[in-house]
Length: 258
Image 1 (cartoon, rainbow, N blue to C red):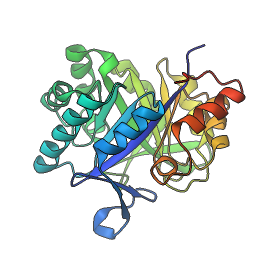
Image 2 (cartoon, helix red, strand yellow; image 1 turned 120 degrees about the vertical axis):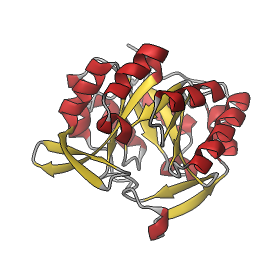
Image 3 (tube, rainbow, N blue to C red; image 1 turned 45 degrees about the vertical axis):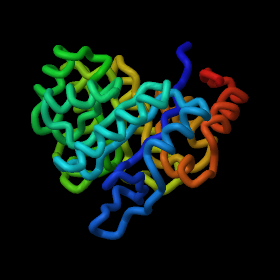
Image 4 (cartoon, helix red, strand yellow; image 1 turned 90 degrees about the vertical axis):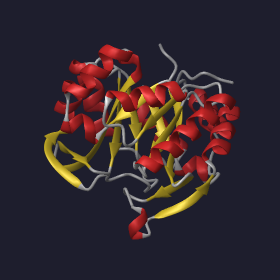
């Protein structure tokens, strides 16, 4: 059985890591400053993180230049794979980030607007580089709708069906973000994670809601996720990556121990 991955996530706004609640936004006062992204990346690298995700929530021309600098500096100091998302709307944006040192690029709203972007990116750089991130919200019993524009805009698309289509187009990984659970620390949405995991043949990363070590074990065991992504519990010192891996190993979940 493949080792399950532990992935800290850094939301970067104006060159600093921030953290919000249920996709809170800067203009609404919904973000808290956490620290320097490269220093945090080095900390998690040293703790044994399997990967690191940087998400550019500025997503402007200035923000993109700032993010390129962040990725270049992080790649120079870290030895884990780096994924970058936010504001990637064209294959040229993918190339920019990959040349800066990212190992994968994550696309979300742009993939919904132009699904062919997934196919073209996979053909040019390989499916292993293309991650499709899906922000979803439960809208009815057993149904989760895809939202875009930072969780603000409903699409009418079913999250499970979109995950299947994204993989068929060439996505090598799905990051599944629960808007309902994001930042609440009340646990991942296990049901939608399991449904997506059972529907696609690529790794699924569970995101949104981590608050305890048990939450992570539950979504890996019951939700059948291949990896867990978390932010708040790491940024605010609730747990370290080593804490998570030690706990998972004690429950028999395969992890890569540093």
